[in-house]
Length: 65
Image (cartoon, rainbow, N blue to C red; front, side, top):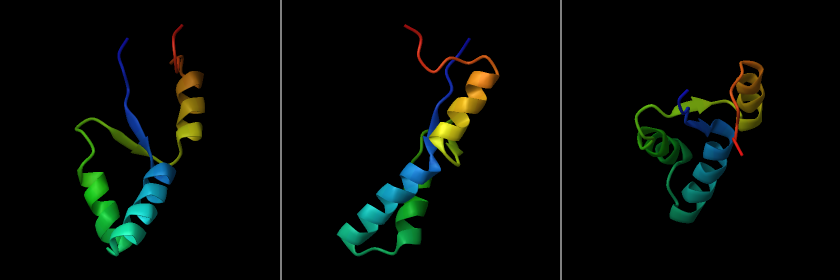
């Protein structure tokens, strides 16, 4: 057992748009900086909900109570 960390690309794009607008910085520049700032081992995935379903299909639990 271990831990898998991922970043939802949809959420990353949303915050990149917000930051770009607030700072008057080109979106591509902001997005590149955000992606480069991800911690090592963090996987950028298309959508959190999609990966959550795939992980559960492979026996991973999202949260253990």
